[in-house]
Image (cartoon, rainbow, N blue to C red):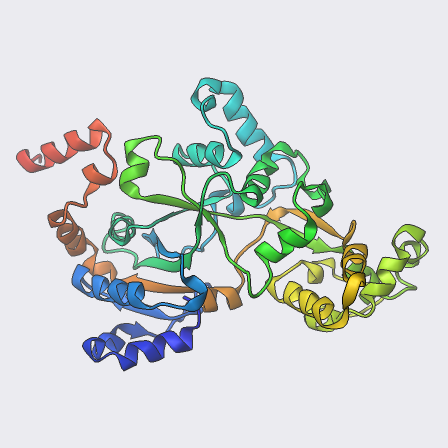
Length: 389
């Protein structure tokens, strides 16, 4: 969650939650370097959820908490498409368009790219969407329903602004399935201005993960209170590389009159702060050091805000941005700094999963509720009345 130190202080200051600190554990998972609780019952879990819901920050006035339940606490927070080893050969293009070609009637009434992907995700196709829910009990069910007694589970919590399906930036990102070679797409190619895109996805004061709620086009979506986090492609800063690498190393770019003026402007940017891991070795440069991050864009925006004033700010901003940022085929992951600042986790003891599932059942949350299809109702009835060898 935002401002972890303030959040912990808030816990300690509430007398009614004086024992809640007993649930806080040391996070020893490098993928989740943030505030972490451990619980052994539904009651423990709901005490933490109650506190999360009462903790307010000025940056989150209109937002709600979303939850992701994972039956293995070691799983990474990454969508199924992002787990593929190489996405440079049109995999997303082939997956989505083949599905559309084989079953066009299933998508005729859907009007947005986000809705198309969310329906495909629902039926098991790997996409750039990651399932969350606004119902903490649903997240707890998913966390406990598999690997019972074998793996600790995790519920990841994040406070987010849940967008509508027609959000233009979400539509642009979800529409990347229309590009076969996504690494050939420039930020300028999108219908949204580079400045707005960078500000929405990376800028410090405005930074939010893109989360949207699908239309309730079936009962399962409604019962699961489903929302999706949308993952964009990684973005690469060519001008940062050309300037940091030196004029001699990238002379053919510096001699290009179309971008020379922009490169001269980029020379004044705080590139060492923007890309602190970059090692300047002319002719031997690791381009991966120049992937855009939350940190790099924060310093970039701050620089132009502080150093360019008056009417020149428009040209000063636009010139070094044109044909500068190019997408990669790989999806953008959540960096550790953001994970620490924006998320918290509730870990469930593997030995308590079965007991917690029984407790959830008394609250009306079981497999037949989460999955309303008839076969799950039949399974519930069978388990109640029959025993097999």
